[in-house]
Length: 265
Image (cartoon, rainbow, N blue to C red):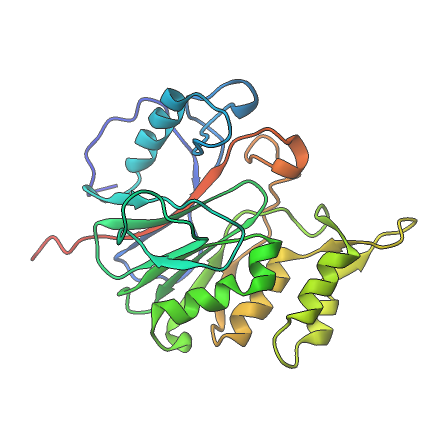
């Protein structure tokens, strides 16, 4: 990319959102392709907490910076499957949160996933950005709504992109998960939420859940009508994605959004 002049030592493949974001927005999800990790973490593992060698993760994260504007700091989080939202880069260390937002260039909002749903958001004028880690617990607790509120702009001025996650034909859950979503669903959306769960044949009490559809319901109910992405399944595509549900001990992808600095200032 034109704002970085660096030589890549281990090529990586990324997934760029197909959305009409402003030109000053850089956004993407990594895959497991490329990278320096090996064994069960083979590829571009971004997580330091999963048992991978720290030096390998460090090299992978160094590769990641090549996709970002120069002098951009990645604001990593310690994710808890909750709904806490923080301002990216506004605290030391890695805060306990599942979403972050930013309004200044020089900081990237980032989340890590390996089946959970990563969601990127930005304002239509490119002034504010956000990233959310939305597994089923976070979705049910309202992490996306909390993220929209934290951005402190009109929801109608926000667009969202849904990154790679476990797909609706692979994500099996128990009836307790469905009940949590139904108990906490947005007003008037009970039927729509119910339709996001398909019963399993010959397996009473279990369902296939559609994280993408559940996220769209949540975002739409929060006032965000422009929602893009969806349709990539981490579980079924082992060559491109890590999947905790499939493999257990495994790596993590990163989904990141940042602003390009105004080089004319």
